[in-house]
Image (cartoon, one colour):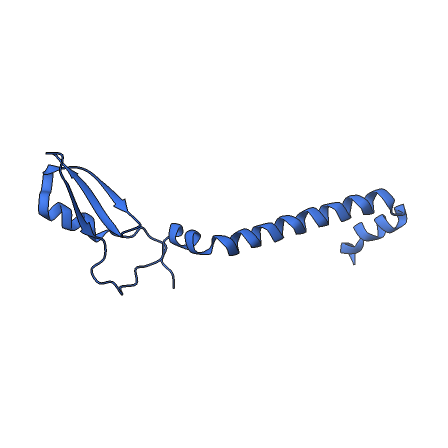
Amino acid sequence: MITLQRRQLVGHDILLARHGNHISSMRLDRSNDRVVALLDDGSLDSAPNLITPGLQLPATVRSVLREDWKLLSAWAGMAALMGVLMTGAAVALGATADPAIIDALTAYNAY
């Protein structure tokens, strides 16, 4: 089962253990999968973000959207298209159909 929780960044813990209160800011370098810290004296230090390269971390909402954005976009597009088609069919049926047919369609739930 996928647990959608924020990933704990190992690089943060490593840098905090190395430098403690001497860290001004930290950022995540996604391309290199490292955490980079700016220290009080202006120098930079970085640490890897994974304990082992083959470790599978739990999925997060961002990771699912980043990996499956094409599929989710296609589903959203198909749902929007179906909504437009059904709305158009209802409008066309209401404008052109015989009133007796419309009465029969609206009374169908009574049976």
